[in-house]
Image (tube, rainbow, N blue to C red; front, top):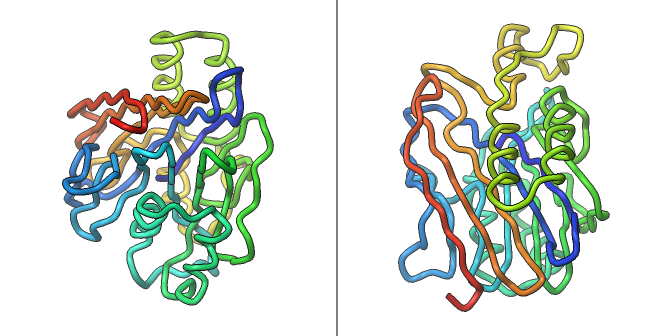
Length: 255
Protein backbone atom coordinates (compact mmCIF):
# COMPACT_ATOMS: atom_id res chain seq x y z
CA UNK A 1 0.00 0.00 0.00
CA UNK A 2 1.03 3.57 -0.45
CA UNK A 3 -1.71 5.23 1.58
CA UNK A 4 -3.52 3.90 4.64
CA UNK A 5 -6.08 6.12 6.36
CA UNK A 6 -7.52 4.54 9.47
CA UNK A 7 -9.62 5.15 12.54
CA UNK A 8 -9.05 3.21 15.76
CA UNK A 9 -12.24 2.73 17.83
CA UNK A 10 -14.12 5.34 15.77
CA UNK A 11 -17.51 4.47 17.31
CA UNK A 12 -19.08 1.93 19.66
CA UNK A 13 -18.94 -1.51 18.09
CA UNK A 14 -16.21 -0.71 15.54
CA UNK A 15 -12.61 -1.57 16.39
CA UNK A 16 -10.89 -0.44 13.20
CA UNK A 17 -11.88 1.32 9.96
CA UNK A 18 -9.41 1.45 7.06
CA UNK A 19 -9.34 3.15 3.66
CA UNK A 20 -6.21 2.30 1.66
CA UNK A 21 -4.65 2.57 -1.80
CA UNK A 22 -2.07 0.26 -3.31
CA UNK A 23 0.21 1.93 -5.89
CA UNK A 24 2.29 -0.31 -8.13
CA UNK A 25 3.50 -0.88 -11.69
CA UNK A 26 0.53 -1.93 -13.78
CA UNK A 27 2.57 -4.73 -15.35
CA UNK A 28 3.12 -6.43 -11.99
CA UNK A 29 0.84 -9.50 -11.95
CA UNK A 30 -1.79 -9.36 -9.21
CA UNK A 31 -4.70 -11.50 -8.07
CA UNK A 32 -7.71 -9.54 -6.75
CA UNK A 33 -8.78 -10.22 -3.16
CA UNK A 34 -10.11 -13.69 -2.45
CA UNK A 35 -9.96 -16.43 0.17
CA UNK A 36 -6.58 -18.05 -0.42
CA UNK A 37 -6.94 -21.79 -1.09
CA UNK A 38 -6.13 -23.87 1.97
CA UNK A 39 -5.57 -20.74 4.08
CA UNK A 40 -7.35 -18.53 6.61
CA UNK A 41 -6.27 -15.44 4.63
CA UNK A 42 -8.59 -13.18 2.61
CA UNK A 43 -6.45 -10.77 0.59
CA UNK A 44 -5.17 -9.73 -2.79
CA UNK A 45 -2.03 -11.50 -3.91
CA UNK A 46 1.16 -10.22 -5.52
CA UNK A 47 1.83 -13.00 -8.02
CA UNK A 48 5.49 -12.05 -8.40
CA UNK A 49 6.47 -12.07 -4.73
CA UNK A 50 3.66 -14.27 -3.45
CA UNK A 51 2.65 -11.97 -0.59
CA UNK A 52 0.04 -9.30 0.00
CA UNK A 53 -0.25 -5.62 0.89
CA UNK A 54 -3.51 -5.85 2.88
CA UNK A 55 -5.41 -8.81 4.25
CA UNK A 56 -7.65 -10.16 6.98
CA UNK A 57 -7.92 -13.59 8.56
CA UNK A 58 -10.82 -15.77 9.66
CA UNK A 59 -9.79 -14.96 13.23
CA UNK A 60 -10.41 -11.24 12.68
CA UNK A 61 -6.74 -10.24 12.37
CA UNK A 62 -5.56 -7.62 9.87
CA UNK A 63 -2.21 -6.67 8.41
CA UNK A 64 -1.46 -3.80 6.01
CA UNK A 65 1.88 -2.79 4.51
CA UNK A 66 3.50 0.27 2.97
CA UNK A 67 7.02 0.69 1.68
CA UNK A 68 9.27 3.52 2.85
CA UNK A 69 10.64 6.30 0.63
CA UNK A 70 13.63 8.29 1.85
CA UNK A 71 17.32 8.39 0.85
CA UNK A 72 18.43 5.89 3.52
CA UNK A 73 15.65 3.33 3.00
CA UNK A 74 16.62 -0.24 2.07
CA UNK A 75 15.32 -1.08 -1.39
CA UNK A 76 16.53 -4.64 -1.93
CA UNK A 77 15.84 -7.92 -0.20
CA UNK A 78 13.14 -10.50 0.38
CA UNK A 79 9.56 -9.61 -0.54
CA UNK A 80 8.10 -7.55 2.31
CA UNK A 81 4.66 -8.75 1.19
CA UNK A 82 5.49 -11.97 3.04
CA UNK A 83 5.22 -10.15 6.37
CA UNK A 84 1.44 -9.54 6.37
CA UNK A 85 0.88 -13.16 5.35
CA UNK A 86 3.06 -14.40 8.20
CA UNK A 87 1.14 -12.32 10.72
CA UNK A 88 -2.25 -13.43 9.40
CA UNK A 89 -1.34 -17.12 9.47
CA UNK A 90 -0.16 -17.14 13.09
CA UNK A 91 -1.85 -16.48 16.42
CA UNK A 92 1.16 -14.51 17.73
CA UNK A 93 0.61 -11.17 19.39
CA UNK A 94 2.09 -8.20 17.51
CA UNK A 95 5.02 -8.11 19.98
CA UNK A 96 5.71 -11.83 19.61
CA UNK A 97 5.40 -11.60 15.82
CA UNK A 98 7.93 -8.76 15.68
CA UNK A 99 10.30 -10.75 17.88
CA UNK A 100 9.98 -13.74 15.54
CA UNK A 101 10.86 -11.59 12.52
CA UNK A 102 13.68 -9.78 14.34
CA UNK A 103 16.57 -12.04 13.25
CA UNK A 104 15.55 -11.52 9.59
CA UNK A 105 14.67 -7.84 9.80
CA UNK A 106 17.58 -6.54 7.74
CA UNK A 107 16.80 -8.95 4.89
CA UNK A 108 13.62 -7.04 4.01
CA UNK A 109 13.40 -3.70 2.21
CA UNK A 110 12.24 -0.89 4.50
CA UNK A 111 8.60 -1.22 5.51
CA UNK A 112 5.73 0.01 7.66
CA UNK A 113 3.24 -2.51 9.04
CA UNK A 114 -0.17 -1.91 10.55
CA UNK A 115 -1.21 -4.92 12.63
CA UNK A 116 -4.57 -5.60 14.26
CA UNK A 117 -5.14 -8.38 16.77
CA UNK A 118 -8.65 -8.48 18.27
CA UNK A 119 -7.16 -9.51 21.63
CA UNK A 120 -4.60 -6.71 21.77
CA UNK A 121 -5.65 -3.84 19.49
CA UNK A 122 -4.02 -1.92 16.65
CA UNK A 123 -0.24 -1.63 16.40
CA UNK A 124 2.32 0.09 14.16
CA UNK A 125 5.67 -1.56 13.46
CA UNK A 126 8.51 -0.60 11.14
CA UNK A 127 11.87 -1.88 9.95
CA UNK A 128 13.52 0.38 12.51
CA UNK A 129 12.90 -2.46 14.93
CA UNK A 130 11.87 -2.31 18.54
CA UNK A 131 8.49 -3.44 19.78
CA UNK A 132 5.34 -2.58 17.83
CA UNK A 133 3.64 0.53 19.21
CA UNK A 134 0.01 0.48 20.28
CA UNK A 135 -1.90 3.08 18.25
CA UNK A 136 -4.15 5.42 20.22
CA UNK A 137 -7.86 5.77 19.40
CA UNK A 138 -8.63 8.34 16.73
CA UNK A 139 -7.73 9.10 13.11
CA UNK A 140 -4.31 8.23 11.72
CA UNK A 141 -2.54 8.28 8.37
CA UNK A 142 0.34 6.31 6.89
CA UNK A 143 2.02 6.72 3.54
CA UNK A 144 5.69 6.07 2.71
CA UNK A 145 7.04 7.92 5.73
CA UNK A 146 6.31 6.83 9.31
CA UNK A 147 2.98 6.87 11.07
CA UNK A 148 1.16 10.23 11.10
CA UNK A 149 3.79 12.08 9.05
CA UNK A 150 1.55 14.60 7.32
CA UNK A 151 2.31 14.31 3.62
CA UNK A 152 -0.29 16.14 1.47
CA UNK A 153 -2.20 12.95 0.59
CA UNK A 154 -2.32 12.00 4.27
CA UNK A 155 -3.54 15.42 5.45
CA UNK A 156 -6.24 15.66 2.79
CA UNK A 157 -7.26 12.05 3.26
CA UNK A 158 -7.74 12.44 7.01
CA UNK A 159 -9.96 15.49 6.48
CA UNK A 160 -12.09 13.43 4.09
CA UNK A 161 -12.16 10.47 6.47
CA UNK A 162 -13.31 12.69 9.32
CA UNK A 163 -16.19 13.85 7.16
CA UNK A 164 -17.00 10.26 6.14
CA UNK A 165 -17.40 9.25 9.79
CA UNK A 166 -20.56 11.37 9.83
CA UNK A 167 -22.11 8.95 7.34
CA UNK A 168 -23.41 5.43 7.90
CA UNK A 169 -23.52 2.21 5.92
CA UNK A 170 -23.15 2.40 2.14
CA UNK A 171 -22.94 6.21 2.23
CA UNK A 172 -19.85 5.98 4.45
CA UNK A 173 -18.23 3.36 2.23
CA UNK A 174 -18.75 5.53 -0.85
CA UNK A 175 -17.39 8.60 0.98
CA UNK A 176 -14.23 6.68 1.85
CA UNK A 177 -13.77 5.54 -1.73
CA UNK A 178 -14.17 9.13 -2.87
CA UNK A 179 -11.40 10.13 -0.47
CA UNK A 180 -9.16 7.45 -1.98
CA UNK A 181 -10.00 8.69 -5.50
CA UNK A 182 -8.57 12.18 -4.86
CA UNK A 183 -6.12 12.73 -7.73
CA UNK A 184 -5.12 16.31 -6.96
CA UNK A 185 -1.37 16.88 -7.34
CA UNK A 186 0.22 18.72 -4.42
CA UNK A 187 1.89 22.07 -4.95
CA UNK A 188 5.69 22.05 -4.98
CA UNK A 189 5.92 23.78 -1.62
CA UNK A 190 3.84 20.97 -0.03
CA UNK A 191 5.95 18.12 -1.37
CA UNK A 192 8.24 16.06 0.87
CA UNK A 193 11.90 15.65 -0.09
CA UNK A 194 12.45 11.90 -0.30
CA UNK A 195 15.44 11.74 -2.64
CA UNK A 196 13.56 11.27 -5.92
CA UNK A 197 13.38 13.88 -8.72
CA UNK A 198 10.81 16.65 -8.36
CA UNK A 199 8.67 15.33 -11.22
CA UNK A 200 8.43 11.97 -9.44
CA UNK A 201 7.46 13.65 -6.16
CA UNK A 202 4.67 15.39 -8.07
CA UNK A 203 3.52 12.15 -9.70
CA UNK A 204 3.40 10.35 -6.34
CA UNK A 205 1.73 13.17 -4.40
CA UNK A 206 -1.99 12.41 -4.97
CA UNK A 207 -3.93 9.80 -3.05
CA UNK A 208 -4.93 8.28 -6.41
CA UNK A 209 -2.21 8.10 -9.06
CA UNK A 210 -3.36 7.93 -12.69
CA UNK A 211 -0.44 6.72 -14.78
CA UNK A 212 0.01 4.52 -17.86
CA UNK A 213 2.89 2.54 -16.33
CA UNK A 214 2.66 3.14 -12.57
CA UNK A 215 -0.41 4.08 -10.60
CA UNK A 216 -3.08 3.13 -8.11
CA UNK A 217 -3.91 -0.54 -8.65
CA UNK A 218 -6.57 -0.94 -5.96
CA UNK A 219 -8.58 0.94 -3.33
CA UNK A 220 -9.84 -0.96 -0.30
CA UNK A 221 -12.21 -0.19 2.57
CA UNK A 222 -12.19 -2.52 5.59
CA UNK A 223 -14.02 -2.42 8.92
CA UNK A 224 -13.62 -4.79 11.87
CA UNK A 225 -16.17 -4.93 14.66
CA UNK A 226 -16.55 -5.97 18.30
CA UNK A 227 -18.72 -8.94 17.37
CA UNK A 228 -15.96 -10.29 15.11
CA UNK A 229 -17.64 -9.34 11.84
CA UNK A 230 -15.53 -8.04 8.96
CA UNK A 231 -16.45 -5.92 5.94
CA UNK A 232 -13.94 -5.80 3.06
CA UNK A 233 -14.39 -4.14 -0.34
CA UNK A 234 -11.65 -3.86 -2.95
CA UNK A 235 -11.90 -1.93 -6.22
CA UNK A 236 -9.16 -2.60 -8.76
CA UNK A 237 -7.92 -0.30 -11.52
CA UNK A 238 -6.14 -0.60 -14.85
CA UNK A 239 -3.71 1.97 -16.35
CA UNK A 240 -4.85 5.60 -16.17
CA UNK A 241 -7.38 4.68 -13.48
CA UNK A 242 -9.73 2.66 -15.68
CA UNK A 243 -12.05 0.67 -13.39
CA UNK A 244 -11.49 -3.06 -12.99
CA UNK A 245 -12.90 -5.87 -10.82
CA UNK A 246 -14.74 -5.17 -7.57
CA UNK A 247 -14.63 -7.67 -4.69
CA UNK A 248 -16.93 -7.40 -1.67
CA UNK A 249 -16.58 -9.70 1.34
CA UNK A 250 -18.60 -9.62 4.56
CA UNK A 251 -18.18 -12.38 7.12
CA UNK A 252 -17.74 -13.44 10.71
CA UNK A 253 -14.37 -14.97 11.63
CA UNK A 254 -15.69 -18.52 11.57
CA UNK A 255 -16.91 -18.21 7.96
